[in-house]
Length: 223
Image 1 (tube, rainbow, N blue to C red):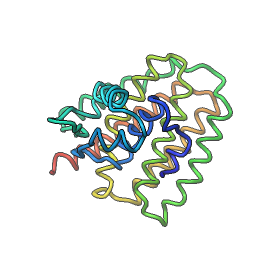
Image 2: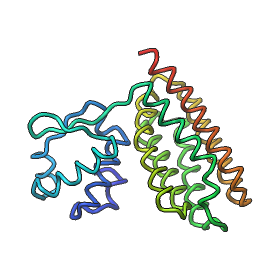
Image 3: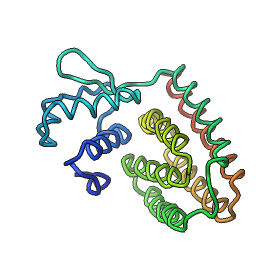
Image 4: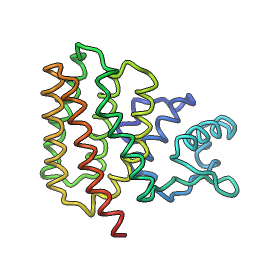
């Protein structure tokens, strides 16, 4: 069992939803993977009826699409859709200061500092899963600062749609550059949040998203 799943419950629909969503985000289920309802129901010890509700929720969030029979397929994202998602993500990121209240919780800063320490392992360890997990937990920590529930939901949904696409492109990107960008991102985010500079936070989040889009788009366009 992955570490990220150890804290989640197999016994509730919301727990199963979180597990499947994280598996998709961290490429345990890569785009194009077919998921069997029977296999998943057996793994989680539930009937297919509540499982289908979980799968329908993930389909609504554009992470899955129903296939023929009892299979569901993990979605991919083409360059046009990627561009549209990033466009929304950048606009939202720049305006997140409207939905964040000061002071920033100390636990948020501590989580980011811990992740910065974890990121140091990536300098000598080309672990794509760890890289993806750190990115996932950064998003989780930052989402926790957003007081507007709808803004938080949209921010998280956009991450889950495209974060996995970036992760799938990592083998074709410069590993050392990706690690340095991650470390730099964490340093900048910690600094602006410690100062309570919410506009600066939004500006950096927008720029980080723009740079990520440029790198990903080049890989996808070349395929």
